[in-house]
Amino acid sequence: MKKAIIAAGVIALLLAGCTGKAAKEAEKARALEIEQLETVSTQIDSTLNEIDEAVMKLDTLINEL
Amino acid sequence: MKKILSVFPVGLIILALLTCGGKTMAQQQVETGKAKKEVNQAKQKGKDKVKEAEEAAEKEEDKATEAVQKEEEKSMEALQKEEEKAAEAVNKEEEKAREAMNQEKEKVRDAADTKEGKEAVKGRGNAFGKNKGGLEGRDFGQARAEEARMKNQEKKSELDRKVEDGEQRTVQARERIRVAREELEKEKGAKKINDETYQQKKEKIDNAEKAVIDLEEKIKKGKSVPGEI
Image (cartoon, rainbow over all chains, first blue to last red; front, side, top):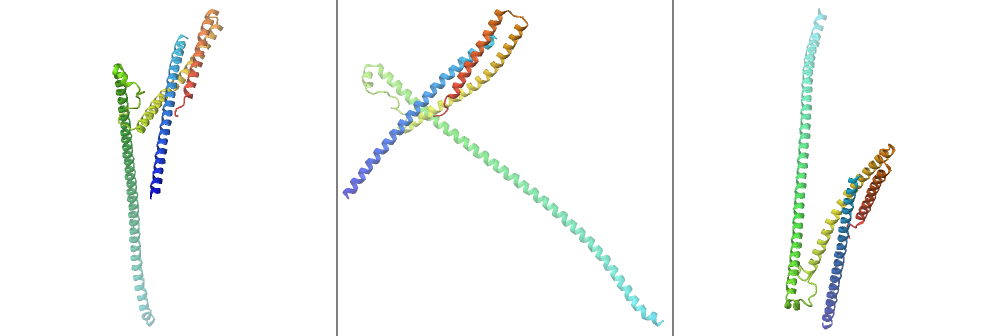
């Protein structure tokens, strides 16, 4: 009986440990995803600005023709 | 005379038979005519019934189609409502999370202003994610990721629009440059302009062409930005 209780306790502890670890890993992956999304957002912002500037410059030069 | 008397009954019988036969034939003809009429009437009735049945079937089909369309419309409306509700719920959660974060930031700033606060704040580290607006850790993370995804999608759509617009502009600009170059060459050929003016105009056209190439490069860069991670 005692052995069974001890074994059950050990299994419960192992399960809890694994679940916690999995949750932490999922959180890490999510944080990484958010970081990547923010990086891409910044990249998009910069590209948008570059396109705007290029369009303005082209408009000016075309109007001068 | 005897012969006549012996033949007379036979003739009578033949006459009677002929008369009866004629009557029967006439009756048969009348009956046949009636039967034909009846058959025609029956055929007409049959055709009418078939037409009615076809009309009824068409009506049934129309009704069924209408019912199916109504069901589809209802289901579409229900889906749209569900989507709107879900979007509203997500927005509310995001707003809550944002408000909570802002409040926390303000609190941290206020506390940091005072000396006591400075001591209290010392060691707390970054307060981001400490107050999760009533959301549990995992849900809070998911909400943040969802928010980042939404923002990313919006920016990507804006970029796509700009890229499309830019492409149209490059096409128009290239056409304008081609026309300008042709006109310049014509003017030069007709000796309407001197070399100096020609060089100036040519330089402007070249600069415009460079600007088109530059814009095309930016557009290419915009196209290479990944849409999803």
